[in-house]
Picture 1 (cartoon, rainbow, N blue to C red):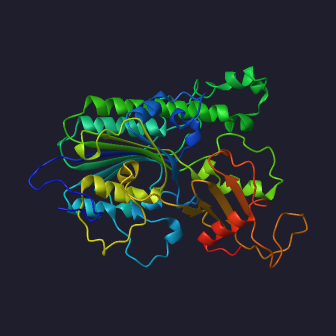
Picture 2: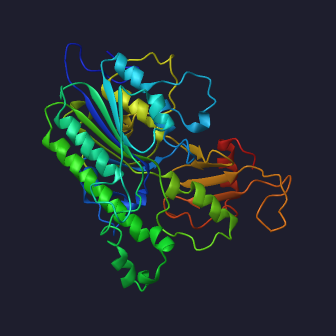
Picture 3: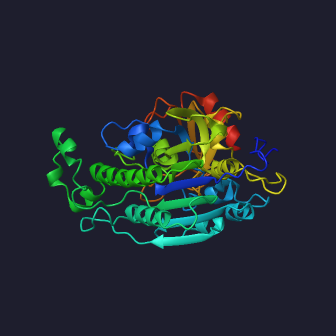
Length: 415
């Protein structure tokens, strides 16, 4: 028997309860996590998950706009939003194959959550800020609810997808807000003199919130390990988009720098770690790293692969590939990825380059001298070398005109 993805299915007659747990965030900077190279923010549970699973170093968004995350439910990047082919409903596909899906989320209901058509959706409240307690943050409330429901579950051996979703790091409670300020004081930066507004957006505050989120990720992983049975389980932890958590640039005077602030790797590259347990199909995916280019639209092929859901490939058109097959090198690697900001910026990412382009503005500069492009002028373009230029600092587009022309051709843009 072969699944619609072309991968071997499980033998008929073998009843195995497949479980998948997804943890997702609206935004999270990959560079804030130890398993992605951060050396000063403590994220031991992210690191433990990475050591027992697979890490994707080049996981990218499909858009950084308000539609970020929609590709999770549609299986195609937002840049293909006008695609005429049917858009799959993963919840319905799973349900038709005896697999139930549940969502526990903090915050308002999002479009991708509606499109998914979960069998059950529960939204919890959470608090952020100095006056909140560490167990009252949105992610803490999501994890506590998930642990409670799993402990009281009627059928722990059912085929099931459990999805936990929370906003990105916010203002942390007392204690965590100042956890990392000492590091900056030791470097000669007087954090005591910061205004409330400066303090709120300081990278030390973001770091404290990341560490608190890591703690609750650890509580969830601990629960999953304690409740482990003989059934296979897939755990995926990811984010819809990244975040600039570090003051990378002191000035926006250079036009090319502002392009990177919108579509650079700090925003477009997001964390992705997966762990497979007790499934002989995938061997021992332990402490594995992949530098392949992967994208948020790969989630549906991954889950259909995991649950072995048969589907006629002519009924839906998926843009992605299974992460499970990517990490095993069983599918051809992508040569490039494309994504945008939902407006006038698009980017093409290859293993060696990041090229960001802005559409023709067609306007003259205004009376205040604000930057614009004159009628008929070329689009603004920036080019960065990867992976060496981690922070997208050195725009070399003027020195690599042939590379720019070739990459813009892939985007369908004139050079």
